[in-house]
Length: 275
Image 1 (cartoon, rainbow, N blue to C red):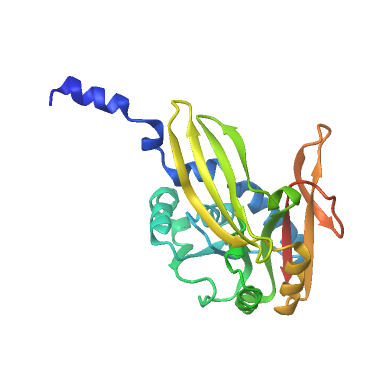
Image 2 (image 1 turned 90 degrees about the horizontal axis):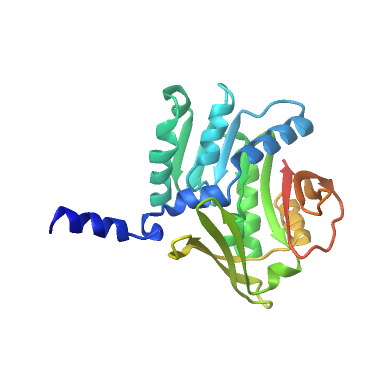
């Protein structure tokens, strides 16, 4: 094959073929800066001290673990995930960029979050709704109980949740980002079991698509259920943080403790559970 033909073939390679699904996910879904500030500020507000030891369950690429150890020289982080491929991606793209002293304060474990044993930590994180893969109430309660046991005496579990009447619909939502469009698809929902199947797709300006880049199967728990299960697991206090709205009637990214919320079509909230 001539050099000209080789070049022509490279030029024909679609954006979807060159795309890195983990990089796209981090750009469109994750907000580690927000999570860091939310956890850091609210732990200090609740406990009157600074958190230093974090365990990130369902850690994926461990972006939050790396952000945590960059935050303070005393901070240490442990990431837990069953997926060897995503953990390796995190080592190559995040841990490799840390300073040696920072890298030494991160540990990644390819283990089940329900059975992993770690030294006591100040904070356990279970973000991006991944805890919902535990679809049986007793499974979720047992997981929360094991998290409680892994916390220091004044430790806190932080997690997030989503809902609203649109959460029960089979629908697609598109969000434009620089160079690509993020597509969240709620493919199916069973009202008898609460089981739902969701996908993340990515569309590109050259017309190519990365379909089903991520697949999720989980149960859509309600907030009353979640609070009850956390208390049954032994946590002493559960707080829901509701997001406010700006002058343009858009979410303002500010989450405050709340005992009630509006019947919005879609919402995301943060939760803390105190040992």
